[in-house]
Amino acid sequence: MKLTNQIVAEAAEYVTEYLSKHLQKEFCYHDFFHTFSVVSAVGHLCTALSISKAETRILLVAAWFHDTGYTQQTDGHENISAQIAEQFLKNKSIDDEETETVKACIIATRYPQQVHNALEQIICDADLLYISEPFFMERSALLRKEWAATIHKTFTDKEWYELSLQFLRNHTFQTAFCRTQPESGKQKNAEKVTAQLEALNHKVHEADKQTTKQTVITRKERKEKLPALERGVETLFRLTSGNHMKLSGMADNKAHILLSINSIIISVTLSLLAKYLDEMPRLLLPTILLLCVCLVTIVFAILTTKPKVSKGIFTEEQIHNREANLLFFGNFHNMGWESYEWGIQEIMHDRTYLYRSMTKDIYFLGKVLATKYRYLNIGYKVFMFGLIASVLAFVISFI
Image 1 (spheres, one colour):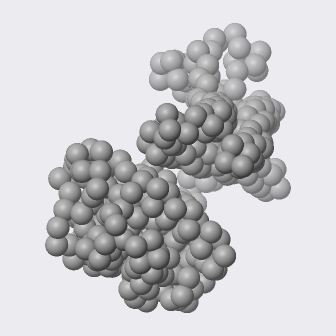
Image 2 (cartoon, rainbow, N blue to C red; image 1 turned 180 degrees about the horizontal axis):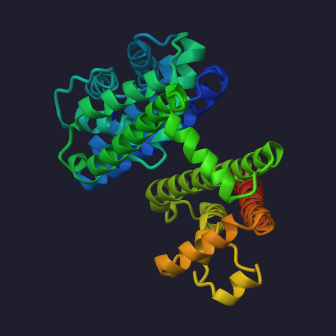
């Protein structure tokens, strides 16, 4: 018996239940999300490369099973994954030839990758396609955490960035398609890692550098021109502003996770379920419900990260009246250098104006954060309750 779409669907259901029961929580990278992402990537690559339907089904089954071996061991898990897939396919009376092809595709994902045909090239590229995605840094951090918990490999920040950069530079995509757009994404991520490494090295260098005599003289000159700020006040503004920026970054990361997950769900739903709606019209309403939930969630995630820039102009009268806040780029980005320098000099020589500007900057950062987290909260609620409703709708339609 050959692989059919029904067998692929049963494989997806089997692996989903198998991982939920047997995969330990320490595997925060090689989890269901990773498996689901690889399956989605395989579907995308098969469409782009015009792979036949029969070969696409083989690759989809291999993608679903390729990391099930992590439920038993980490080293050599590909062999275990192949055995689990083989047992499943034998129970479904699948031909030995297709079973062996599925096993070979799974074994090919072992790193360093050694491929022998086009199918193995596709699944290998799908397995590592995340290195070209915008969320590479987040997934890389999860892999670091997983290694520490499962194989007790720990790294300093510098060691991890160096290891990641070496991997990105040495890696080569197997398919011609991935050597185009995904390759450029990989290079952008390499630049991000390089920037992180340079920033870390600069921070260490600055911490080790001792204060020179010229620096002391400069500080004395500055103290003569400007009123001294109390250490407690400086610490207050620095910590508060830093915390606001961290919270803003966290909101953007969470919104990006919502965007990625729902985009994948929409892609998989349209590619896998849409073709069955004519045969099973009872799935139409649950499918529409799921797509609507994902779409609304994406809208609120976009609203969370949507930038807002003001006109970027201040007047001399606003400076004299101590109304303009020049610490926020949105208030001066359209002004000339001379006007901006004069305004900053006014702030530097007026401690009350300086404190007020810093306070106003923190206040409006908080207002922006409140809006971000309000949209983010709505997005997560829509996703959570909408996903529950969609699953229940699918269950009811099958019953």
